[in-house]
Length: 294
Image (cartoon, rainbow, N blue to C red; front, top):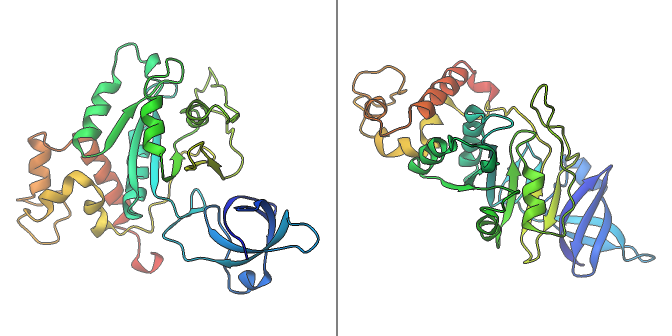
């Protein structure tokens, strides 16, 4: 039976790329019985219809390396988090939520600061330096000047990558610039509320010219962190890790304890203050969540 990868799923139909082309498939009833739902990005085995090789059924789903719930996609290797430097203004709390989610799934992380041509005062440099110093790959892009597009294209090569970010930050425009074959709809910004219209209606795996895959996802502005334990949060902040073992007290929450190495690093500006403030906000949110809810 042919093997392939699910590119998209709409209305109970799954479109699987195989060596025989794209096959429209239904999932076998056994998956429903086992409470398994095929996901975009799944590697599967399909049974072709005797009457039409462009149609078939999913017979087997191979083990997943990981799964994301929002967006619902499997076997992702890399997350590109797109942040507009203006129009809309950058939301660093949301950026850190995405980073934490990606760290918990052990994904490679790239931060893409987009629309830099609109930032006449180069204020985005502070964000660039903060996250670069935290240990992340940061690139700066503009679809109008094409700055950073070649670099972004190189980052995507050979991987399955999710593009994520709030509405209006330019994810679809970036993908159109990366591969001229894409004709993804882009939204116009509302001048009154400066929020992007949702232009991507479903999750779809898009194949680049070199055979790599990217996922364009519906824009969203919230992320649920409730599956992360408060005591594990410090290790999801990359720049915290070298200081955790230096704290005076074992199990330090890094919120107010004396002898906390992370607080001292913040005071010495070795750790970005805004990143630390976001840590505190997440920690206070998570510490009251009952263990049985996780």
